[in-house]
Image (cartoon, rainbow, N blue to C red; front, side, top):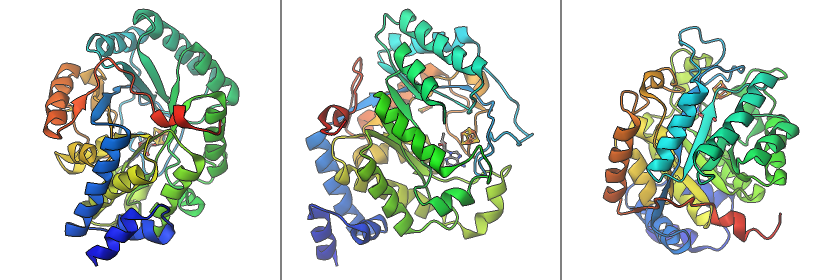
Length: 362
Ligand code: 5AD
Ligand code: SF4
Ligand code: FES
């Protein structure tokens, strides 16, 4: 059996069935997969891990995704919106600590005021950091004009998870209305790529009703779309959301975690030179979750630099780590974690996706 697995791992083309089988591995066979993923990682992207200081600047959201704790209709969340000055200060903290890049993430909004505010912020952050800090946006679905505007102002990477590339599953976890179309999501990813962003996507792993074949198709989707970056992690149920009532269908939390690690390892083998983030949700399950991902494929990590006061209100899922810590704490803790994983921090380096520059098709 271990021999069979070794054969699959060494194939040059992995098909749906191979991928599905690899995603299901545990124990000794999983170790074979992990070994290969680490080998590919060290060979193609090296042993450096890059920081993206994460600023969760607002939990005000206009959408109602069934899985998310800050969805519009959840009345049990206190809404916040960090001031422009505090956002710029967080970016300056990242820059001074040589994080080199930040991620600006928040609930999804697309009103003019919001679009212009972000535009203004991108410019202010560039100014305040001597144009040295790299800016990744994670602000959901927007128009072509908005994406272009933000790109022109200096953002150069964008994260927009497809959540699930299986349309039926996507539709089961989102309301059926104009605001939550699978095709819009897909179209946005195409726009981002066309504009010239380093484009990242990802999925949730272990959604109610999701199968290994669904997840294998997600990996093939990423390969076919030719993404530059990926952030994906386990689905973690939140009691104040509609999807909570489906929890009887869920895989045991350990299985969701294990499968998430397998997804990262297999994606590393499938797309050797992309950037893969060790998702924070991994640490909500296992205190060493993110380190485990860094050992077997992931090369990006996102220390939280959101002002501590606001962190407790940005809980997309339960058990989120680092709620009471400050930016300094997370920074120090993170350095230690990366050393433990036998990796080196790529301080002061943007750590752009190598794949973006290696791409042959635009
Ligand atoms: N569990 C895990 N991940 C979640 N996200 C939202 N809600 C949850 C949850 N309950 C993820 C989505 C989204 C990203 C910002 O957070 O994939 O794209
Ligand atoms: Fe809003 Fe994003 Fe949560 Fe959906 S996943 S409700 S868009 S914050
Ligand atoms: Fe936030 Fe460890 S990374 S406290």
